[in-house]
Length: 257
Ligand code: NDP
Ligand code: 8X3
Image (cartoon, rainbow, N blue to C red; front, side, top):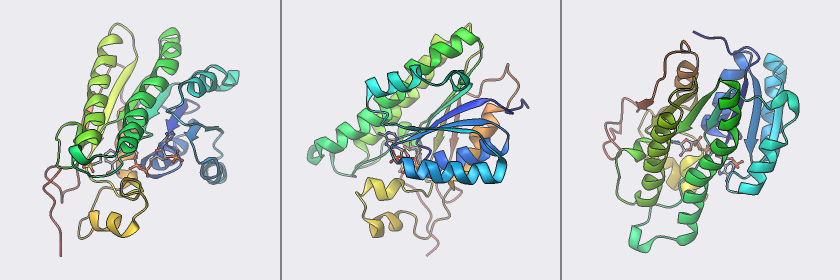
């Protein structure tokens, strides 16, 4: 197992769910954290907690990953002592709606494609060259079982996660010959704000997604990401698919009531 002490970890989507859980796990291991999201106040709260609990050094970025010029200027203008990113966790992402494709909402489509595919590409494009130059680094992309199995109403969200799968594979191939590692972590059902965002703030509908199920927690995913990033430097974990015991596929879920 390699040490994460003083390594610089950039986590997108750190203001909620899996991203917040990753921040806690990596802080506990002594990493220095660059936390990115649009909701700066949430990042500030998280940074304060991590500083109190672990004495973690943090650098906060209020960033919309869809905004390419903003991603470029933010990454290229990082303070010198924050610029040598060791681990990039491309976690920011969302689903919007569960409509039939032929009834889909154009804005929902744009938001998913721009965030889940283009945002992930922008971060990778601006961060990875530094890793190659320094001869060290690890990129972890949050895919999903939705990238492996399409389900009714999942259409465009599933397409974005299938794209993440292809991008992770492509990046691994393009980095062959360097020591840089690439991992895709592809969960099933994790209870976060994901469903509330999918249903545009309809909390009751979001709650029903997890009703009677013992879902994965954000900590479960952070734990897997931590495992992947702490293997010996010659080991690359390419892809991890994980689901709750109560789930067997995107559409097969066992409910206890
Ligand atoms: P949450 O809704 O809890 O968190 C999503 C995070 O993404 C937030 O921090 C949000 O921050 C950030 N984000 C969204 N859009 C943008 C943007 N344009 N720019 C910057 N940050 C953005 O969901 P999860 O933690 O569940 O999701 C994290 C990742 O895991 C996503 O990629 C999701 O697709 C994936 N995933 C989730 C699963 C689940 O069942 N929950 C299963 C499989 C994969 P802010 O709004 O402050 O910008
Ligand atoms: C999130 C899991 O099954 O809701 O990516 O698409 S699912």
